[in-house]
Structure formats: structure tokens, C-alpha cells
Image (cartoon, rainbow, N blue to C red; front, side, top):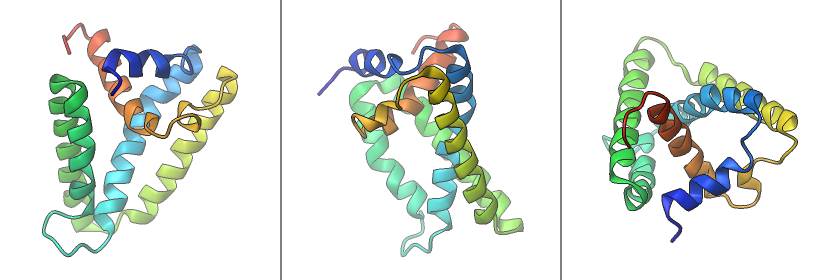
Length: 147
């Protein structure tokens, strides 16, 4: 299995243009939260919901790469689940979340057009899991918080 440094280096090759980086910093967390919300909106035979159940193997993948980033991503995921449950209790949000999901992906592709490179996940779908971790690690690096 690749190290986190190898994953991040490979991912970074498709994310160098300042405009694309700015788009990713906003869009990737929004896409993550919208996926969690859309999965939670599906009827589930268990108390946890599909968003939480799908997050478990993803977090285990992150754990194999970096304990610290896994813990931070688990907190981000838990906050997203909590936010979704609270807001969805007032009014069904899935139509809005689905629209947000589509718009954020559109923004991602616009960013990659400016970058002049295809998204990394076109070569390896695991980059769909690496992207959120890469954005989170970048945030902590800018805040000078060790991973």
C-alpha cells in the first residue's frame, strides 16, 4: 500500500493552479458533507444510517495512512452527521443537498479545466478518498498544526 506521502504527491500533480486549489479547498469538504447527507437520507435498516456505515471502511483506510488525520476526519464526519440530523429534522434537505453536490462537482471540473489536467480520480478512483484527506492536511499545514 502507498504511503500517505506518496498519495499526496501523486494527488498534488493534478492540483497546482491557484484557482483549482481554491476551488478544491471549498468544494471537497462540501462534497464530503453532501455525500454523507445523501447517504443518511436513504432508509437504513440500522440505527446508524448509511452515511455512518459507509464512513467506517473509509476511516479504516485513513487509519492505515495516518492516525492523526483519521481522527480529524472522523470528527469532521461526526460533525457532518450531527449537522445533517439536526437540519433534516426540521425539513427534508436531500433536494438541496443533491443540488449542492452537483454544483460543487461542476466547480471541481471548472477548476480542472483551468488547471489543464484531468481530475486525479480518472487514473485511480482511490483519489476520491485521498482528496478530502489532502485538503484537510493542507488546512492543518496552513494553520501550522502538526498532522
